Image (spheres, rainbow, N blue to C red):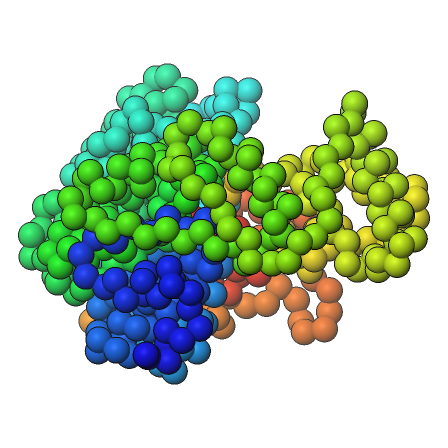
Length: 496
């Protein structure tokens, strides 16, 4: 038996060695699916001789992708870990290589919420709108819904229309929604910017319109693995269908009982009906749980069994028995917090160290009542925000920039001159007007103050506010890899 398989349980071993065709793994919580995915990648490389660059492994977050790379590197000893990305991060790779098919430079911008807000500010100022007409948060949500639901072919305007024609469409818009939407499309195209919806849309368009490019990527990706398949949405599903169309080696992992992103368009039926869409699918159940005691699993199994849209299964505990599960229903949030604090004091009196206790909550607004109760009872604690070590956790749902494939292939930032003309490539330069040695260099943006001295952000004016910069300069500063955006928003980059 291969050394890679020695420490796997039978279900994990079956998942690792089932390399050909369509394979669906139903992996319960705590069943070791990440371990199985990493070992399967290593098995393809070490045992079957597949090059890492011919394997695509799609994870749901950048954090998961980073952990996967580390595990695979440990198993293979190879620094080349192929394509391990989120869907959006992988589409960045596609567009970096083939954006010429839609007349975009390789140095296109990937826009996050801060960049979108900057564009909205420009639109509001140009058209005399105020936050009473629509807040920035509502405008971002509206734009996303327009792109996903109401105007799914919007990308054709960005690709097919000239900048002047798109500007006319923006100028002729009368309703607030149309003004914001077409103004945003115009601002996007003017600075070669793409948001997360655009990344997949543009990639699919390139594949639909260019058979040679589509076939190139299909042939390159001999094996495709997708994690958290229960949270896949329609456009991601379409991209998956295209990519696996040549070799037809597709391995998916998911748990219909853990679907939590239906509000973002996820559809658990893609997982449940996978065997109907792809006849001959092999289904593997991974039910051994290595995380929780039998008492916790008994409660979880009993509760989740009430779900209607699911595949019937029960997690099997591997840990020894523990204390019974205690459920307390309080009359109010403050009463709940007081009960938690009282229970913690009881446990501490029984010899449990404070550092061995954790309070988990589903929403940030709950934390205040708990923190106040702990403060009253003089219970030492470290709020979650303190663990971020100064990083800004944005509560508005900003998911951040996709993680990019490699430092030497980071997209540069388009720099538009003050006259507003789109950059023309000079000899030895790319379409953004930057030489290869300058683009992406962390030394491009000077520090805001001398080393060792307190200073203000280069984006702040004398009174601590954004200065009245031309929008191109402001957007460029916001998007610098080594600028403020990269320094204070690491936790934006979590789920794409």
